[in-house]
Structure formats: C-alpha cells, structure tokens
Amino acid sequence: MTKNLTEGDPLKLILPFMVPLLIGNVFQQLYNIADIIIVGRTIGVNALAAVGATAPLFMMLVVLTMGLSNGFTVVTGQRYGAGDLDGVRRSVAMSTMLSLFFVLIMMLIATFALDPALAAMNVPEELFEDAKSYVLIISHGIIAMMGYNLLAGILRSLGDSKTPLYFLVFSSVLNIFLDILFIVPFHMGVAGAAWATILSQFLSALFSLLVGLKNFPVLHLHREDFHDIRGTISLHLKTGFPMGFQMSVMCIGQLAMQTVVNSLGTAAVAGYTAASKADQLSVLVNNAMMTAISNYVAQNFGAGKRERIRQGVRACLIQTETFNLIMCIGILLLRHPIVQMFLSDPTKEIYHYSDMYLTIVAPFYFILGLLAVYRTSIQSMQNGRAPFAACMIELVMRITATVGLSGMIGYTSVCIASPLAWIGACALLIPVYYKMMRKI
Image 1 (tube, rainbow, N blue to C red):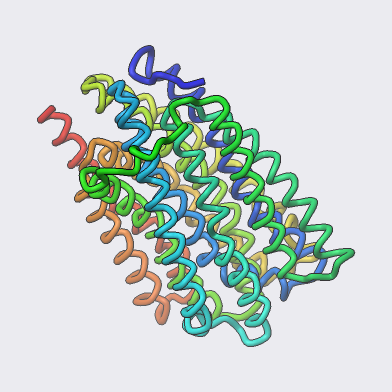
Image 2 (image 1 turned 135 degrees about the vertical axis):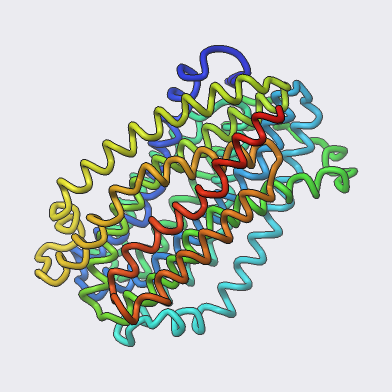
C-alpha cells in the first residue's frame, strides 16, 4: 500500500501521486461550496452572504488543520524514506499528540473570540446571527477536520494518496445529502449546513482510521512510541507550525479583504463570495502539488538523494503551471455561469463584483504556482526560516494593499491584494531555493 518516491522517473511519479490529492482537495472544498450553493439557492441571498461573510474564518480552520498535519507528517515521510520504521511510529505518536493540543487551542479561541472577530470584520447586522451560528458549529467540530487531515497526511507520507480520497469522496457526497436534509425538510437553516459538514468529516476521519490500522502494520503504535518525546517534539513543531502558519497566511490576509467587502453591503459580499469560491478551486490545484512535492522531497531528502529533488521540483513546476493555465482560461470563460451556480437570479451589481475579482486575479495563477512549489520544497528540506519570512511578506503585502489602498481605489484593492502578495513571497523564495541547491 505504501509508495517509494525515491526511485523512478519523477515526472511519472509526481503526477499520479498528485491527481488523487487534487481530487481530494476538490471534494474537501465541496464541503463549503455545497453549503453556499444549497444555502443560496434554497434560503436566499442573505443566507449565502452570511456564510460568505465568514468564509475566511472557515478557510482558516481548514488550512490550519491541513498545514499542521502536513507539516507534522513531513517528518513521518522523512523517517519512511530513511527506512526507519520505529521513527515512523514515533512520528505518528507525536503528530497525534500535537494535533490534539492545537485542536484544543483553536476551539478555545473560537469560543471566546468569535463575537469580537465578526464585529471587527464589519459583518452586516442582518447577517450576524446566521454567520455566528455557522462558524461556531464548525469550530466546535474542528477535531473531526483535524482527525481526517492528520490521518490522510500520515497515509500520504507512506506513499498512499488514494485511501484518504475514497472516504473523502464518500463524505463529500454525504455532506450534500445532509445539507439538503437539514436545510429543506428539517428547516435548520444555516446551522444545518454546518452540522452536515461536521458529521460528514467525522465519518471520513473514522473510516480512514479503521482502514489505515487494518492495512498498515507500521501504524500499530505501542506505549514506548509515546516515550522520549523531547527529541522529536521540536522537529515536528519546526516543520508543522511554519507550514500551518504559511497556509493560513492567505486566510489572515483575506480577513482584511473580507472586512473591506463586508463594508460595501450584501451585494458585494454575494458577488465576492461566488468569485472567491471559484478562485479557491484553482488554489486547490496548487495545494495538491504542495502536498505531492512535500512528500516527494521529504522522502528523497531523508534518503540523501539530492539530485532527485532538483528533478522533482522541475517536473512539478511543469505540471503545476499547465494546470494553472487551464484553470485561468476556464474561470475567465465561465465567470457568469459560476455566479449562477450560487444564486438563481444574480443582479448586475453582483456580476460586477464577481467579474472584477476574477478578471484581475486569474492571470496571476502562474505566480501562485511558483510560490507553492518553491515554498514547499524549501520547507521539506528542513529550512523553516525562509518560508516563514515569505509568509510574513505575503501577509504584510496583502493587508497593506487592502487596508492602505481601499480608501483610494475601493474594491479594486481587494482584487490586487493576492497577486501582490504572491509576487513579494516569490521574490524571496526563488533565490533561496537555488542557493540551497547550489550548496547541495
């Protein structure tokens, strides 16, 4: 069931490994997209705007769990690449303990900071209660989200990207069914969409755990695997925390962007929500490549095969930018049908906001592809400083563009914030990568 990424043609290894990840990312994103589509078409514009107004908070939880779990399991992949099965088990044990710790922290923060956060985001008064209900339920069920992402990351670090996909597809379809059930006949409103998401992800995590234990003997942990944690906790935090932070930087910046959009009214929120969901689908391509190249580089770094790292990064760039070109063209051609997915009768004002965002952002997907590949490759070679610095550059540029320019150019500042942030981060990471490879 495991897959060795230290041998064979990198181009032929990475693409088959990435495709299940991409499909899985799409289905994982369908949780929130299905919520928004069903809420928007069955309840109305205000309900859609209520979910959309808090989208950065939802995505913050998603990417934090993905980033932390992917970062922790980089160490697992390195141990597997080095043939150290005892190290694999100790890494799984440490990843589990750290994941539970961060879940508790996120639940506490969400419980006590949600009202001030929504107020600071300028959530319109008519949307406030629905928005609060949705995010509170999601945040209290964060353990299900973290559980699936951790188990999926562990299996991928062993070279198996298919097993987590099967259960994710199942739970995504179940989420759509439960959305309709809870919202239409049960009349649970926006809260029903949140409960559907949590229940579906819990089942996805449970099935991944059961099948993982059955098919992978190395995952059968013993008491001694939880001992002597001092030597491993710092290494896991060194990879997990920066990766979790760097994946959440986009959402931290988007909080500022969403705040500006919320101040423009319900039509702006609805148009931006539809456009940003389409934009996030393209980001999923790059996130899938990030996970694939992370596991590839981690295994080859652990095995001491430096030249294969260079070959794999080159192959990954070719594949990533091909996908980004396809996504850019598709999104630009389907701007209006995308909005119509979420609302049955969009207004001209809603089209205006969605068209402007997609037209500006989509052509810069190739920059996002460079950022994803180089940042993750550097991180997987145990250099956490440069990716962290790039995250700070990205965060500062996104917030500066949005907050600093919103008074002069309004909504346009939201549209240009992400491209400027991607360019700034790449300006640091690309030279760092090539400097590291020259040293190697």
